[in-house]
Length: 361
Image (cartoon, rainbow, N blue to C red; front, side, top):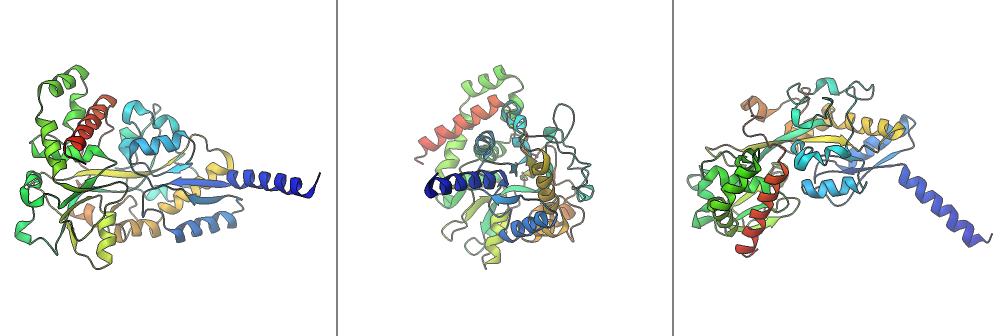
């Protein structure tokens, strides 16, 4: 065997070993910091694990994108928004494994808010959780206080359709459901009206076929949009109103900007992001995943969830949790994003696609 062939075989087997020893993490922009990856990797090394954590590209963008990456086994650990798990007939749930909440490696689990650890939409058929709560917040509209006077800030969702905001509004591209929820709230309907209707597919189809009100409202909203952001909001100076889950706005403010969450009289829909394990994990790799999760529900990271991201921490050990302290009913059942039924999700995607086309985006 010549030297070149020997080297090729050596590098080939080394690449297989390296791949097998990595835990691939699919997460949202800003959720996992490089220094935290280093800290977890040091922790794993100190504990004798020949395994390292690696954040993959691209960032998480939405339910379908995350499902496809998990299905392709490109992620071992994910940060799924809770309602994604059972969306579209629980297709993502089948790619996840139940969390062993009594694992000796999940010592910080006991400090998680009890109201967040046993939510039905995140449980498997046996009642076991497919998630570990990490942090949550509201999908709201943030206003650029440097450009908009306090007296001009919208007080109702319906004001987003006013001519003054045309081209000055930015919404999410990857997640159409919260955009449609805004339209429904403006129409005086519950934010998850279409999903509620989907309990009867016939009723849902009847309403959509015979009434263009929702379609027209969404199309008109999309005509107001200057930019649809893909994975993370852009708080540019040429926008007055930007939809965000909170993290992007807080980071932008840290750089000297002045954006604040608009307090609509209709309220804001809320969400919970979670840590999940692929069904393919087992043995030492699963143990390493638990060590990763335990670090991220620990006090240090959870304090960053609040202070650095402007979110609600899942842990009761944080120094402060302002959004919960101000509103103990923050995670209201009526405003908590549900696992959309497949029929409702299809209808919303269809409405959004038509609105994008008709609005010229």
